[in-house]
Image (tube, rainbow, N blue to C red; front, side, top):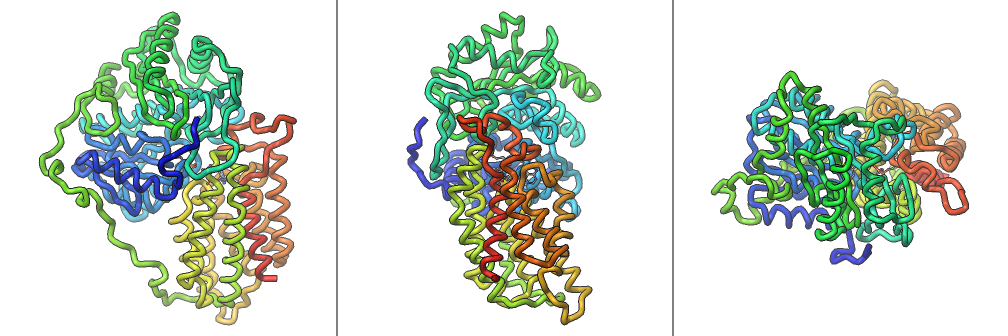
Length: 606
Ligand SMILES: Nc1ncnc2c1ncn2[C@@H]1O[C@H](COP(=O)(O)OP(=O)(O)O)[C@@H](O)[C@H]1O
Ligand SMILES: O=C[C@H](O)COP(=O)(O)O
């Protein structure tokens, strides 16, 4: 697969691509600053459906916005989930009297960011906001993925289409939620690739070796669960169908199939396979299904939910019979589900086998600039004056510490990318660099110069939430939000001459960790950023010695090389990330990013 691109820099790619998408589809509008694509003819009397996640999966899911399908889709950077603020803006833009369903991929970043957006919407009085988390992949063995559940592949697009048609047909909110969850439970998918995809601007080793294929990849270039010598096409398809259909594999058999079930087959182009080869794949899959006495009731093929330019496919089988039994209270036959799958729509990317709704005249005549809207500009945090209690420290020192930490994280970007390419999806370096650049920009605007810690952390939380997507962005945002709350409480309850020493700060960090622990199940030993963050906070609170806290943090971060992942993307990788000599995995990139922050602070304050 090629690493040549017309746009070799990914930083403006998503934004430009969304502008291009809406330009050729007059019924779509875009909030450029928040990368939210939404139906210009949104109907608030029907249940709203919002999907989204990292970019790079096009046409999914921005290409599935339109009448009869999604109300909106929220785009993050390449392979990194959007922030809770972006999702929150989408919830408000396509508000509904009946409720909003957030259909999300079962990856940690999306769970955290969309989950937070849901909580924020509820706290603002928006009722009926529910998550439908889709996990359809069958490749990761149960014993390895038990804490994270099945991850998401192209099956999510079937959920979007069926729920979209259900919403258009005025189905009730809770029925749609139940239906969405059942569709996810009853879909089995598997991905195979001849090579990994290349993300513009990313360097480092990313190829699958010549003559080999990987089976069981995630949507984001995650290393396949199996790396095998490339078999002939018939053998390859047989292996994929076995993984989907076998009923006696204790580590898999996620979806029950029995003779006579009504199944939908989705053959998804992962992005880089020719349409000619796709046709042949469909033919071979159907031949082999027929020899297993399976005749799908509907066959869909084409690009649905991909991984940039990855030469590969995913196969999905959705068992409509199981879904009908699970939802028998409101779905009387599998043909009702098929009708929803076949119902008209108005999205750019669902295959033209279904009918299209006509485009409203007023939307046809819109000028290009009319398609771009903005949410009301929020006041820049720096401009917000608060008269609440302050916690004053030496502003110059704290600014120096933040600058050193941000510079060091920027310098670590290539290393983080290398590690995350092995154990994750390769975006951790970019995510951290975006956060560091956000901090440097805020420092240029004067962040921290008045020395008020409360204000500083309030702004820093916003900066990190806005600039960092992905799991790490969510984890840092929640941690910083918790720290800000704790500092506000401390400022309110302490005397004006409260000593703000490392011990005092450590106590606030410990309290922020408690907030964070409510949002993630990760603890020490699970091979995540928590392996560095928890020892740092605990040691600082106990000893009041920053150097000791940084040492504990470093020990925890570096110690992750020995650990088997229990949470996050590294869970999917298992032994396959070991090098040719059988050596273990690199350290956890998120943990090492935090170690760098902690070391940077210590270096500057010493
Ligand atoms: N459930 C979790 N809780 C806390 N941290 C996690 C969790 N899952 C992953 N992480 C951390 O997130 C880091 C990856 O961040 P990032 O690249 O933003 O995530 P993503 O895999 O979503 O692209 C990992 O190195 C790990 O430290
Ligand atoms: O494309 C990325 C997914 O939507 C979310 O992944 P994440 O866990 O990296 O944020």
